[in-house]
Image (cartoon, rainbow, N blue to C red; front, side, top):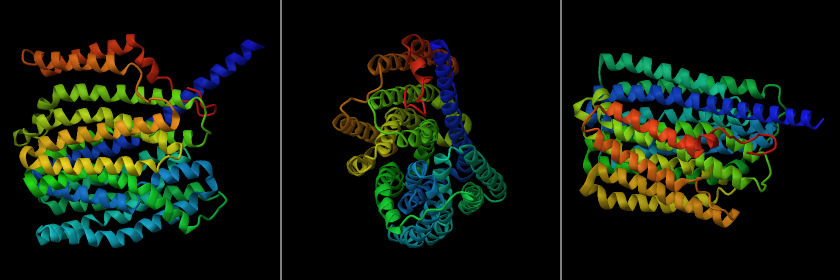
Length: 484
């Protein structure tokens, strides 16, 4: 009898782990499709436009992302958390969040164009910005759908939406750039892709709540959530994007273009923590706090840290051949930027996990203080150092800012939950990685960078295997019992 129970329990554990990996894989697949196609499109645009015009494009995209956050991009997490707890709120939350975002866009888009005018950007660039900022009206249903699909565990729908946007962006963009390589061409492709995705998002969302009971959410509740959930991502985005704006204003559009592509690589790496945390957030939010929270948090941190170390190692060793192959010699200055900037991925991945844990435990108000401190430090350091060190300063300040945020997250979790959320076996693993990088960079002077990178990755993988870190990666949270 006992053996039968044990067998059933083991089967349930296996199924739960398989379910988690499947949902996380679907969430990551959507981001892989989106970011891979965008990556290809951005490289195509960079080659066609050149560093100076591409720098203007990067500047407008940075402003667009900031406006998107001000209008409510952070509410996707709010929808994911609340709908996972009360599914009947799905339609009301979706509709009201979308309406609020559109109203905010009506106010903020003209204000951003006015800012460009004050910064003395030409009227043509202001006109291009006006067309690009139309995307804000498509971002409402897109972000709301993301929260809805995460809460209802329909991650596969994200793949279809991202695929549609990617096909429109790459197809139309390639066609327009082939005819005339201009900033307006890439903007038309961006706008068309965003509205195609929004139409698909609304179509799929309506199917989810069609037969579900409908409960109304007071408008006041949404506005309160908007202020709470938007302030943190807004401030975070400001210190994430302000370096491109400062580079454009102080060092010129070419400097912004050279820095923007390595930064896009760093943003693309966030696919991995996004996919994992998109599944973990509603699962943690739907279960009560317990003594297992420490174990869950430590293993999340370990998994994310290990997953960040591999791209840091690979891109440090392969930055030169990759940049020269894809972008050409005109972007050679991006090589050392990429080598430096990619190391921000390690604290960034960890912050993804710790922020998700705090959000699931409804400690999001702490984000206001942590992000504000990071924003002040980031802006001050960029203003101080960029005039002298240009894009190298921007890359270094990004690493410092992520480490500052990580330090604050660790202190908050230590104070609120009485444990230190550092990854398991962090110090020896970091030491081995550092020695590998030093040895591989020295060896790359005598042989192919591809051979050196492959050998370094194999050595690091063997170390992680014998160290037991790989076992931790494949041990995931059980959705029902909350065990790890």
